View (tube, one colour):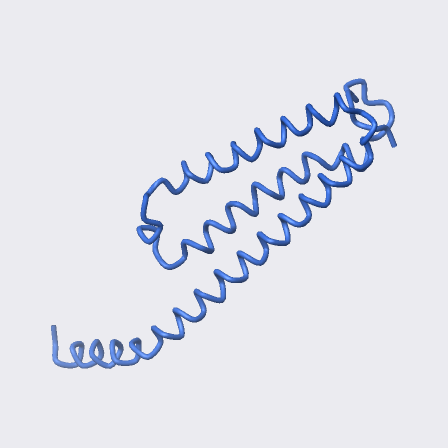
Length: 136
């Protein structure tokens, strides 16, 4: 290439180097925010689950079956994340791994909270498939 192109490249590289620590700091901030969102999703799931257990405390059969379903969901969640990120060394996935891991877990956790909410909140009257959901 021309001398001008080489000079432009050298200047661009020189300008990029100081940005690397800032990039690492912002990645750490993104990771932390994603993992904070996971904690929030997990707290919501636990609150919904606890409310259902309390609301149905007198129905041992239902509680036993719900607990079995929840244990199966936890096993599924863990297996799903292991399949998504199977490497023994998480660093194979780069500096965004914590962000990706926490976002993936948070999404599964939010989905499970939504699946449980009908037992807490009830469903509209008229559903012929109401099963054990309470009717509003």
